[in-house]
Image 1: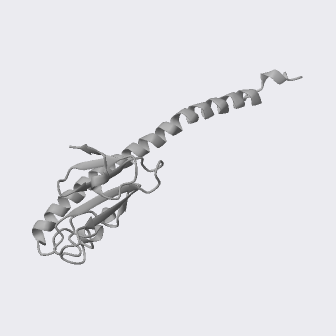
Image 2 (image 1 turned 180 degrees about the horizontal axis):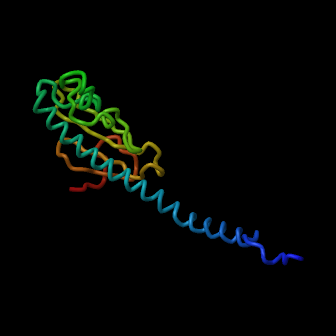
Image 3 (image 1 turned 45 degrees about the horizontal axis):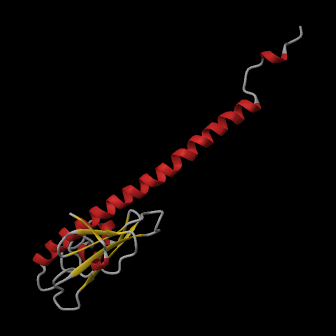
Amino acid sequence: MRKNIRNHKGFSLIELLIVVAIILVIAGIAIPNLLRSRIVANESGAAEAVRVVNSAQVSYYSTYGTAGYASSMSALGGSCTSTLPNSSAACLVDSVLATGTKSGYIYNITVSATSPAQNYNVIASPQSPGFSGVHYFCSFEDATLRYSMTPITSCTSAISAEQ
């Protein structure tokens, strides 16, 4: 008995190509939105981390008044499991933030040259500007979060403030 070729099961090459084209169109729409949401999440995390550093600096200053404000992120963090908190490892921020890099941002603290340090600046800069974030964040003793679209060298150079 002769079989009819048209009765076979499966997809033709044209049908598969149409499905692949539809998937590519959907991916072309979804991927930019996914990348943008990642940037927004990184920026939100950076803003919160700057607030955490502000709180940690206040605690550090009140605990280690003879040292003033902490001069580095590692001084605010440190190895909290093996030693007791001290002025070089205060255990006030998590260990990831204490490294100075978290969620696509780099965190730097600068303090005044006086001893004890009476002023500080904390600056959060995107690791890969445009990809990990587009805003730069900073704050100092007044604990007001400031941001800018251009690199910040000092918190007084930031143009916008967010209460």
